[in-house]
Each structure stands twice: as C-alpha cells, then as structure tokens.
Length: 124
Image (cartoon, rainbow, N blue to C red; front, side, top):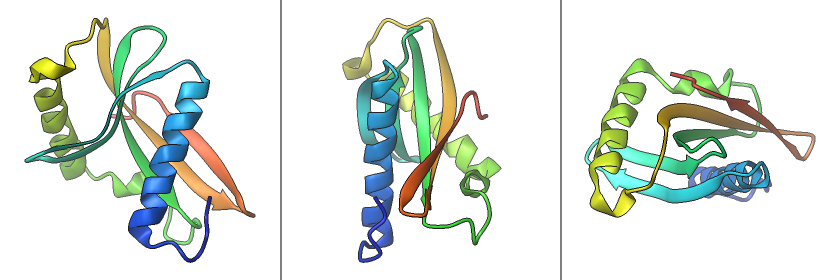
C-alpha cells in the first residue's frame, strides 16, 4: 500500500480494501462496500463476531502532516453517516440478524512503507 503514483481516490480505495481485509482477519464479515445514499457513502458495513452491525468509516493518509486522519470526520459528516446508516438498515436487501449497531473508524497511515492501522470502536 502507498504507491506515490496513486491518485487520492485510488489511495483511499486501497485503504478501504486494506481495512476490510484487516477486519475480516479478525473474524468480521463484510456486508456492503461503498454503499451510496443521498447523504453520502458508507465505506464499509460489517458484522462483527458479536453480531453487531458496524458502519466503518475509513480514513487513509500517506503521512500525519495534516493531523490525525479521524479529525476529518466532522460532526456534519457524522450526522450524514448516521442518516446513511438508517437508509442502509431500512433497505430490505440488508436484512441481517444483529444485536446492536455502532460506528467505528479505521485509520490507515503509511509509515515507512507499512500501513499503520488504528481501529477506533464506537467512535461516534
């Protein structure tokens, strides 16, 4: 991960792939990727081993030059993600048995050629 030749959009997509794979390695199941609503996009929707539907916002950065990646998730963005999540939950195609719902953030920062993953559970 982290080829300097990637566009920001490609780099972000690669970060989302890496985050999904990382969570799957920890026993999570991907339910949706890049799900679009009028409120914006849900990066990843997953089911964790405790049967919690988790809406995962992924922020990828090449460096910490502009601060922590999670700082880009403003209150307005959180509000729109909540609305998008409601749409996802109300969509008949997304019926899945679950015990709870939450919002996590996964940040990925490229450090010396290696991705540094930080998983923030119940971020907002």
